[in-house]
Amino acid sequence: MEELGTSLPLWSCIPFAGMLLSIAIVPLIKGEWWEKNKKWAVIFWSALFIIPFAIKYGFMVAGEAVSEVIVGDYLTFIVLLFGLFCVAGNISLDGDLAGSPKVNVVMLLIGTLLSSWIGTTGASMLMIRPIIRANKWRSRKAQIIVFFIFLVSNIGGCLTPVGDPPLLMGFTYGIGFFWSLRLLPLMLLNTLILLIVFYAIDRRAYRKDLAAGLRPEVKETHEPLRITGLHNIIFIILIVVAVILSGTLPKVNPVFGKGITILGTTFSIASMIEVALILISALLAFKTTKKEVRQKNHFTWDAIQEVAVLFIGIFITMIPALMILKARGGDLGLTEPWQYFWITGCLSSFLDNTPTYLVFFTTAASMGYTAGITTALGVIPKVTLMAISVGAVFMGANTYIGNAPNFMVRSIAEENGIKMPSFFGYILWSLCILVPVFIIDMLVFFI
Image 1 (tube, helix red, strand yellow):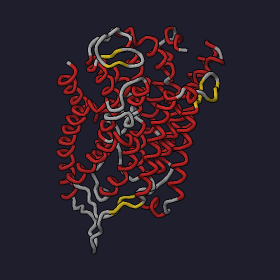
Image 2 (spheres, one colour):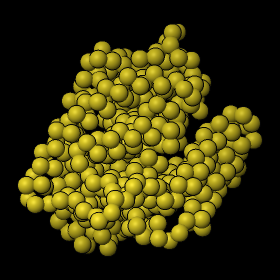
Image 3 (cartoon, helix red, strand yellow):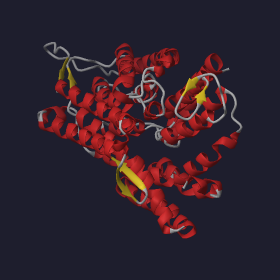
């Protein structure tokens, strides 16, 4: 299948570009139509790739390609998001918590620190509703969600394989579980810079809100902070364990790597165990938590439905782009860590960061290095592996589609009445704030 990437023309990526442009542009010009008909855009762009591909290479080859991305990638991806979405929706932080720049910095820091241990998706789903609720009295608050995506949904997930899927992929290829802790200096530097910038921006917005006469609700009696549905943390931990098991069980016993084969793609026993544990956790969260908790969280299914619909289109239409990348990635002439950092990061901003990470992980491992980190594919210099890892994890923050929680956080924010930047508007935020920080990363760590 991968050899097709050598013959695929670049114009085969047009459906993927069309899918992205639809997400970016159509909501701006036909917002109401898009909300009702986005599924047809997904069907159109997916068919525009699948039908010509099947005619040229055969329907069996096309079926195998689509099966590989749906069964091998999308299914576990959406089940994981669904499970964490359900469980986190049953946890509520209540009490007198009024959003201010200082309070928001603390909440962003807590979420960032949680991301490496319960995953960027888990931390995002756990923290997004409390920070929205704390700032519900404010008018100017889109910047809070933007920095939330930067930090909690992406940068905070770099310290363990649980934090972000690319690092889990590295773990399955022989990198030690705690190796990623070497990325702590990068995470601390990026977090410090971004929190300082955020505080300056949020303080200005906060003062404008106060000048406009906005004030947090004053209650007659003080209500201490408390967490309702705290037992659901057990189910989040169970989901994290399920993700770890999916990567480790096939290494412990090859039988777990076997399973049901669908058009050449194996849905392994390890993946079945992962999916089962996640769905059980989601079910138990609903069964053991009062409905009132979800009502406090304004819990609806809209966000997960939107992600499920749009990302199946993204996964299908990006097939040719990934094929081309896998076949020709070694021809890019990469030699320096900073080159790996930028190419992995820029492509991870628009493609699935896990296969992008694997492409350049494999490229680096095949270069014949003799000193560095020994992996199942070869030796990779420590700095080069750090560059690939950080590029894949950090630069997922560059776009709404760079990492799965980005889009879900945006959807939840808009459900709660927060006007978020458009697709291109968000990219402008990342160009102005994140890219300068990444240049600092390059100069300090990778040159």
